Image (cartoon, rainbow, N blue to C red; front, side):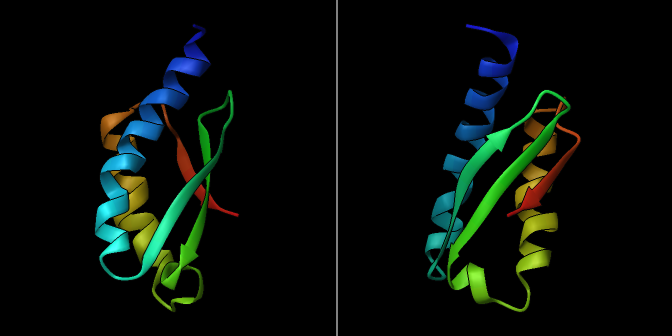
Length: 79
């Protein structure tokens, strides 16, 4: 397994921890990609997709948790 595959697997594990929090409010998140430069792309779904506060959820919950648990990640973007 390559380093990028290991990083992607670790990011998937963190997203798995976040999902129940989002699903409790009718939302969800899906991992789209993790690139070599440390950028994670996610797709917000359900209630999160149309929520006016989705940028807060992305930055304060999703990005913060991923960067804490997978320090090589530089940023998280919604697509």
